[in-house]
Structures are given as C-alpha cells and as structure tokens.
Length: 111
Image (cartoon, rainbow, N blue to C red):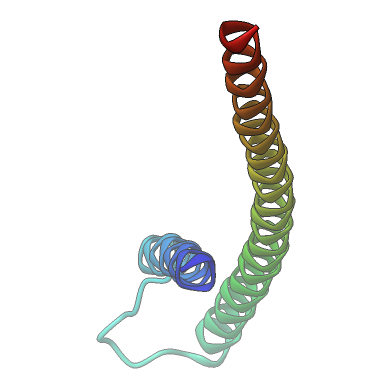
C-alpha cells in the first residue's frame, strides 16, 4: 500500500513538472510560417537552445523535488511505524495491567 502511495505521488510530481515544462515551452517558443534568413535561423536556434536549457533546468528541479518528497515519505513511514509500535506496546501493557487488576480484585473478594 505504501509503495502504491509513493509511486502515485512520484507520478503526480512528474506529471506536474511535465505540465509546467510544456506550458513554459509553449509560451517561450514561437514558430514563424515565413522562410527564415540565415540570421533569423541562427536566432531561432538560440531560442531553441534556450528552451532546451530551460527544460533541462526544470527537469533537474523536478528530479530534486521528487527525491526530497520521497525522502519525506520514507521518513514519515518510519515515524508512523514507530508510533504504531509504541501504541501497540501501550495497548498490550494496558491489557496486562487490566488482567492483573482483575486477579487482584478477585483475590480481594475471596479474602
């Protein structure tokens, strides 16, 4: 179950980053239907390289964010597991104490 949650969260982060990158690409890159001169082609190439660099930068940011989120989920999972172990131990102790209390109460009634 936890693996499904982690995988689902990771997929969500990747999709979120992908949508952001597509939006930035769409609004950064403009294509001209007219034939381009050599200087215009050179400018377009620079714009394309700029977009590629930006996309690479966004991908790295998303990768780092995904790693951080996975570490947070691992930390939460470990913490939650420790809390459950503590609750279980307290519950077992309570049951044991109630059993001892019942025995003592029975002995006092017999006395």
